[in-house]
Length: 276
Ligand SMILES: C[S@@+](CC[C@H](N)C(=O)[O-])C[C@H]1O[C@@H](n2cnc3c(N)ncnc32)[C@H](O)[C@@H]1O
Image (cartoon, rainbow, N blue to C red; front, side, top):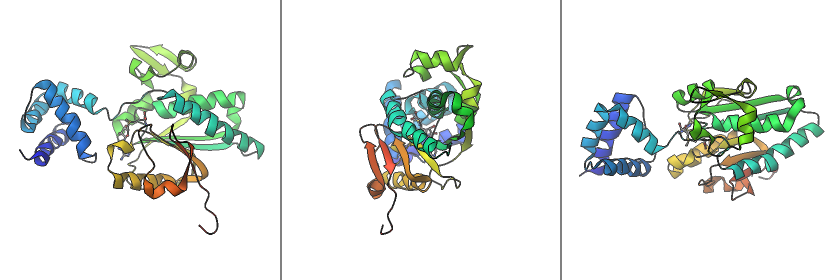
């Protein structure tokens, strides 16, 4: 069996039948997950699996779940969000207060259904408290997938999104809504959304903090390096970058990013000197 052309049968079916294009993702990743799905169903050939996918939208939903490309959660990896608050947001807020420049720009790149930028918004609301209206906050959430951004704008979530969230946040920032919870307007109003493929250069904005978590893992090394180069172009000198727990800074950019907490993947952009 020619493995690569057969995988293409499945990817082609996904594109024609469901208008989703997964060809950008690492083939080994796709191959492993799709084969696991086929194994679970007792299907031995990609051609048969492609046919099943074309006929059964339920299987398409199951495959999406197996690929888990859009999986996210509020305060996903709570220790990472603690580090973000303690080692990046608090120092930035204090520094800006000191020089009377109350502005902060933060970007959640590859934000899926919005749990990540909304988590940052909740941290900021808690940190700034009554002084929040006196701050100029720019909080952007972007993703390549327009459908997840529609869900982010809606701000309605089911239990899956709350696995890592302390009950206190749920009580303070959400209201119960049919079969789930609706995020409060004051959190929702802080975030602006836009569709953005990280393989292309983003619009010209400089951020103090960029989160790009659990996105690079789907790409090969060259594309990871390209994406991180784009992120670095938009990170202010001394700004903070947070990656996902399984992600590494590509070797080509290691000199530009100093670990603040290497284990939790929080880095700071080195301000280049005259010589370098
Ligand atoms: C697993 S989710 C991560 C969500 C969130 N950052 C987190 O860690 O919980 C990965 C997201 O990256 C998005 N993504 C994948 N490739 C992308 C690209 N080239 N540009 C922008 N977003 C991308 C996917 O659509 C998906 O919503």
